[in-house]
Length: 404
Image (tube, rainbow, N blue to C red; front, side):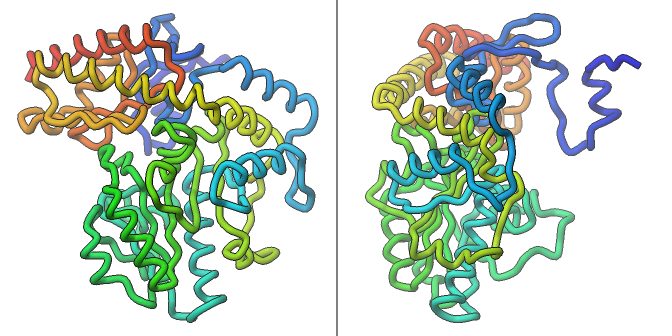
């Protein structure tokens, strides 16, 4: 029996934890997508900051094809060449000395949090278990990471949650200074809150966290799942600050669409993950690591990284110009090519409607909650696609203003 893919079929055969668009994309190239009806779209969503090199980048396709003819998977009873190469690339380009590979950002954060607790028990006190996180943060959907995330809506119905997790206001160093103690094993923070609305950390906040963690023998974890791999114009966002974390997590753009996550840390901290203490069946398999290694090579290029800042300025100037005429947004926040456009109070709650209108006009965008339109396009999106996509978005903005 032949199956016809449709949104109706989705409702019949897929668990209803998602509510996707009625359209079904079937192919992509660069910053363009086409649906089943062959309608074309400019992609400003990037798979939520995943497709950092666009769709079907020829060198990534070549890397995938080449490795697919060699070796797909091994158990972790054996190592493999692509994993070793990728780990070497990541450690040479960052503060880290060792890498752990997983399948996703949530799993990378899970590993980081487990390692922090294990390290604290190994070196300090069995009761040194508290994790400090921040309101409005997002760290994944496993039970530990969703509990660490600072958005209660994602925890509802999954209680009881893991304990010894404290949430404090983001960018409020005084609250951390008041609360942190020798029972704290880790502080986990996004240098830019992505799901929370593209809110950057203040430099003094991150610098203060580093000082407090050092004073209290707590590990500072940077969640760079969304901000890493060139998104802000540096390879990782921590490189924009005078702060070096103890652990850094990466995913999303690390594989440019191939499922992979990484936890990076120092040898001294990594030693607490002794043989058998943690693991992943698929993490670090040769197929995904071969593609991620090529993606890393392409992104970690001064021309590509400087191009991110150039494209940021283009997005920012055009969005501000259009908004001066339309008056839909109260704030436009750009950190590299992670862009958050906050709606005026009059249109609060209408970000999903604006996303839908934009899609109808031929541009794919994201939201970050009900009040913020979020853009996370390819790092190498051509200027002509930026201009064309923003024209479509402007039409959608005007339609929202007229409808509401």
